[in-house]
Amino acid sequence: MSEIEIEIEDEAWNCALSDPGGLVRRAAEAAAGGAVGGIVVLLTDDAALQDLNARFLDKDRPTNVLAFPDASPDRLGDVALAFGVCQREAAEQGKTLADHVTHLVVHGVLHLLGYDHLADDDATHMEALERRLLAAMSIQDPYADVRD
Image (cartoon, rainbow, N blue to C red; front, side, top):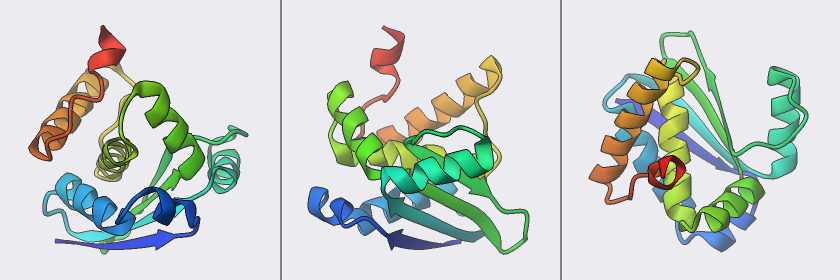
């Protein structure tokens, strides 16, 4: 079983969601599916994600979620989410912030488990898994409007 630690750096998460820690924990546990290893989920702001994105991926802009797998046997890795980007995307896509964040945490944890979406076949497989996990949490298909 995964040990999941939630760090909330930006107080906006606590203002916008009634229980951001619980929400993130449920999503991470669902995605980890019994995998063994520690996961840290950082709920922070756009500036922090922009800094991480620039330092590790050479992309000097904020993004919604980043995942940093860890090769050590007792850790799966870290996932970080940017409040402002997540909030804007949820509004633009007509989703609740809670549903969007749940999807992004699932997506990030799947990256920690080795899933990716660079190739079309890998993306199809990863998205199908995300859909199943989210449906089990009563969250609509996050890719439905993207494909229509």
